[in-house]
Length: 481
Image (cartoon, rainbow, N blue to C red; front, side, top):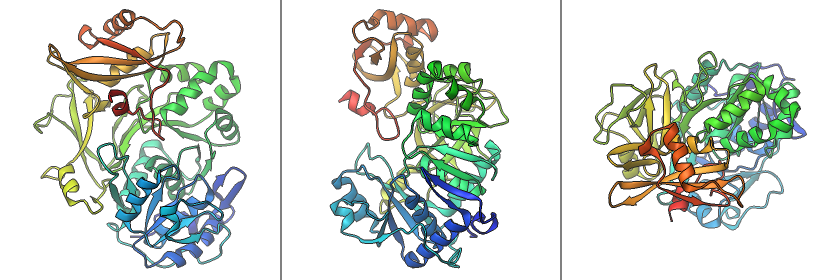
């Protein structure tokens, strides 16, 4: 397979590829630094990357991919037990890190190579791996046991990024701004490798801030990637920050992912900026599956249509495909296509369980599909599908309804056993005013009026904050425990 990044040699030498804060690299500088490092890592099966939000992380991953070596991104916030499990499971030969970075004991035990972003070397080491060769081993969140290493082949990265290029009309003229972590698919594959495959530029904020977003969009950035917590902060800031509204209004594309963006935040951002945020749907094992297209209807609350090359279907609990797309019938999403991972490292049992006998990947995500093909996620099968009174109810639509109440700052919905209903709907609410929270009946009636009586919460529990992970996803298992 040819290089994942032809722009390393094709772009004008002075064209900026990466900028992290005040530090930047042109394509010529990136090619030289990655080429030098690729020569040092070539021949190994896997190398770990201490994935801090710095230039060094981007150079390290590009170098590994150019050398045909699989990179294992490590979350610098992970505890030693989790890091020990990942390193024992993936057995990397080296760890690549920024000079001076302090590494915890499990990582420090590896042979270390400091990444020199000013290294000099040939643009590419000449090695060309096959399309099926592992490019990344990305570890899942481990909500049902120790994290599993999803082996992502080179063809999956190429297929996803090229499909997004088609869906988003993404070109080398685009300049992407974001502040996403670089140990997940969103920030690393889409947010760094995406611009480099297109020949464009990425400006990483280091740490997300609305001031940074406004500055970069005013300074020529054309696209913004974020997670719902980031867009929620943007929505809260917009009424008092006309400069931010103007900057966002001038962007070509605002993209949200990694979790559902509440409809209320969609509406607040559109009202202030004239822009509609688009959503896409993917996961570690599949990279990207669907997206609202740049040239399509930007419909709030949906993740759009399947990307080119991706087959998607909804199935009943027994695996029977759902053929009637009516916007109401809930089914599990299954996908297949060149965007899929190949296996869970060292876990043939888990790999086999993840796929149907005819090759469809079981995502565990529940959705409905509109007659025109648009997909709307209603939640995870394990935590967001509530079976109450004979109905299958997705938590997501109830959460959106709760967030429309003026007294609700944040909301999450779960199910708990009920002797009469099977499961009752429980709302976890962070009130706007903790001294005067909206009443339980008030919230139940609010939901019943917007959706249907059987979707109203039977129990409301008030919290100071919702538990969230690094990507802003609500950790519902922590709520239920």
